[in-house]
Image 1 (spheres, one colour):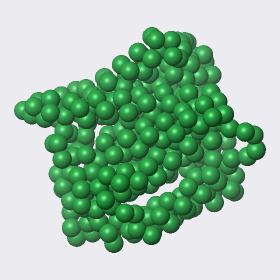
Image 2 (cartoon, helix red, strand yellow):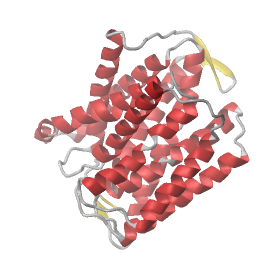
Image 3 (cartoon, one colour):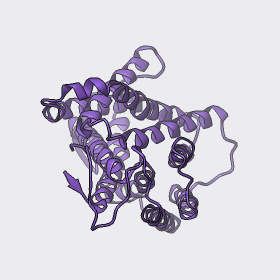
Length: 325
């Protein structure tokens, strides 16, 4: 299927906004007695199962593609799913959530470094400026306060989460192997779920869940409702859309658009939970968008030319993708 870059931006924003719902859905489960780790493991496992029929359909007649891509699938599951999730939730045990998020989203800068060091794509000045503006905006959106010393263990976990996030964008952008995006998402999350459950079985974190009613958006309902939202909206839609976006836009631009997830998370918490964002957070959102626009301008001026970074094109020059999603 042939797609324009505008479709890629739309998918990237869809991925960001659906990823951003995860905190709102997870909160109701955690307040009902679930551990955060159990919610994450259930989210990934259910998403893998839901995507399995579509993945099988997308692979009809080309199972050899999956066999040739087992390395990519395994790395995606371990790095982009298990490591990113486990590292972040370990980080928040030692750090304020805002600081942990800021460290995790340094993965966007790692993507720029990856394309520079591995593919020789030195970031142009507008990309560097966009990165700086977006990071400042991220600090504002997170509304970081306080001057307490940071636990080095938490910082280490946060940086590991950044590596996992960078791996998500880089691996998602790989479409040259012909593996459909929905197959990568399903198989990768199955690998990630197995790894997450394995960590729990090894005693590295606690997996505990309750199965009664929970409170969500001011209403009492079954625990199945927020779990379904966490799995389908915040995992199935977000991962598939994110992979499709990365294969159209490339790892660098899609990762910068992904920064809007934090902004969307603040807005969703406002709409669903009544947590009113501050003026500083609104200003931070504007800075993030400005940073993304600067990077997008550079994508037109200096189009990359590697498998991880498909060529940027204008609206009159469509680009094909193997996302299959």
